[in-house]
Amino acid sequence: MEQVRKSIHGVWGSRWIFILAATGSAVGLGNIWKFPYITGENGGGAFVLVYLVCIALIGIPIMMAEVLIGKHGRQSPINAMRDVARVSSASKSWVLLGWLGAIAGFLILSYYSVIAGWALAYILRLGGGDYENATAETINDSFSQLQADPGEMIIWHSLFMLFTIIIVAHGVQRGLERAVRFLMPMLFLLLLILLGYALSIGSFSEGLEFLFKFNFDKLTWEGALTAMGHAFFTLSLGMGAIMVYGAYMPEKAPIGNTVLTIGILDTVVALVAGMAIFPIVIANGLQFNAGPGLIFQTLPIAFSQLPGGQIFGALFFILVSFAAWSSAISLIEPAVAWAVERFNVKRAVITAIFGVFAWLLGTATVFSFNIWKDVKLLGFNIFEGLDFLTANIMLPLGGMFIAIFVGWVMQRDIVKNEINLSSKAFISWDFVVKVIAPLAVFIVFSLAIYKQFFGG
Ligand code: TRP
Image (cartoon, rainbow, N blue to C red; front, side, top):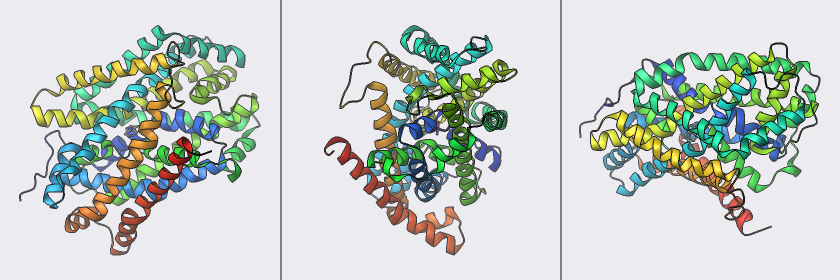
């Protein structure tokens, strides 16, 4: 059978653009907003260790597997899975993995946009000088006010979704590629400035201790699942985002090194964010387990005390918004690419339709912080439920099946050819994808779900 070697959606300009785009997808709210707060909620060090092990042992090998399917299939994840399964004489049901991913992307985008909306709101708050010399208490109250106001949250949520739609509507090269080119380096620079501030306030070593002292008493199986789920979330794994980016990868780019670079960049950003934030939490006597509001309650304190802090602060939240933006586009791209292939309609039209769906669903997350606060299922409100369902269930399972597919089902020649590793490296990668990664996901997942819902 003849292979289609080029995607109809275009190809990244170079291997570096692929790295930038995939890093843009990986580095986002997960690194700067979620990683610090879930680390705070789960007691620090031991949680961080599990997260790091999951990145290295499960995340990076599965990311290689995901890129490989995309690069070979050269289409949306749904159609790539269908074709690759067919070529490998495997069951047609593997296409379900593509569907699961597209749905997960929607669900994540719906709440992702709401949180990114907070970052947009904070650009204005800091830029407007609201927090100049403000106390921690004022800053706290101001966050509560935002959460209590569905109207304001919806405005920012709408704006962010609109931005996302605009980029994706413009396509791979003119939209996605142009967006990521300048933003990533800037974000890095600002994180370093924040890190410098954290170093100067005197609680830096306590912050480090919290992050890196492996106190296993505090770690539960649920925490381990959260760490593992977050490894998938932060690397954009398990739902086809990286697969579809792989479909636009230049033919010659080597998968192994490229993926390793992305994984390292992503991890460094998360750790730097943690190292910047926890010293501020400690120095100001704030709550470690503040939850989703953590960065919005801590960072403005730092900025209120820095010379020129209001400008830096506004700039910082601009970049958080950009990081979220370059991630959000990858959440909707798998579904958009599929619809363009399937219906032969304009990308812009499809993107707008899908974006509006995700937006509507996002309003449920908005309300879960105020008027629907007490609407709960199994102890989760809507936002928490969506987060748990996607990050802790759909992504790990999606990733596990991707590993099983590439390890056991996909035609061996294709796998070997595409992955293009030295024979030694191939043997270890292959073993991890076949055995270690699926088994690890299975064990952590089953134990955590059992404890969460059935046991003490
Ligand atoms: N990785 C992004 C972050 O950390 C979020 C994200 C983008 C994502 N695309 C994804 C998560 C696909 C899971 C799957 O903010």
